[in-house]
Length: 248
Image (cartoon, rainbow, N blue to C red; front, side, top):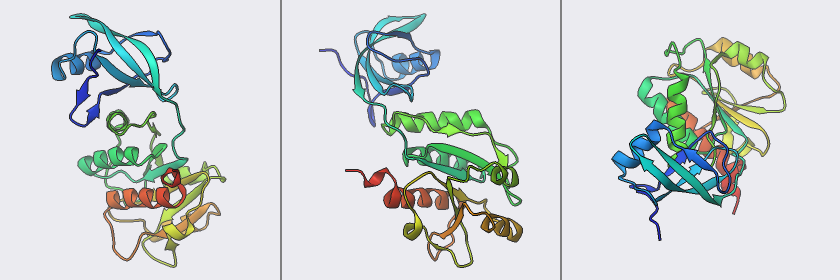
């Protein structure tokens, strides 16, 4: 029986954009080819898992292995396509290393969409969307997700609120005021979590947010958390109170 290519963390899973189905022959990218052949030492006849966010996860055999490329043939579906929890993470960009960590862990926690937002106190001047996507793909491959979160284009806070879908509750992680604990008010349904930059939201932004009917101010407890910590803590709380962590 052919071997399944393994990584230190488990089975090798690769994200692709092509359609998947039984019997499909698929050429792998140069990056995937290099990783399989030169890092994992895979060979013809070995098996890997592929997913594209639309057709579930599939077992694929390395059918043709040459110096010019690798072609795999899909054998059987190993996991169905399931929707990600209907929760977005709206976050002010932070410094490079915490920012990449934030995207990776938000992907592992099941966020369906990652939306960078520029606030008045945001320090990071730009967002590298391709880099965010690469981090999300890597995290999805390693965490057994069958989808990759959407990476939305950055928006200023004012523009974000002006175009916000009113049916989606925006849980605003507020550092002060009379906000209730997220665990008490989180409920199933379209949701998003908003966290601020290193310096927090300024008073005018807090007032603007609290004036919107779709915004629910929440607190994450008595301690002031780092921006990246707050975002991940909030996702974990929402998942445990209203997300797919409740499923058996």
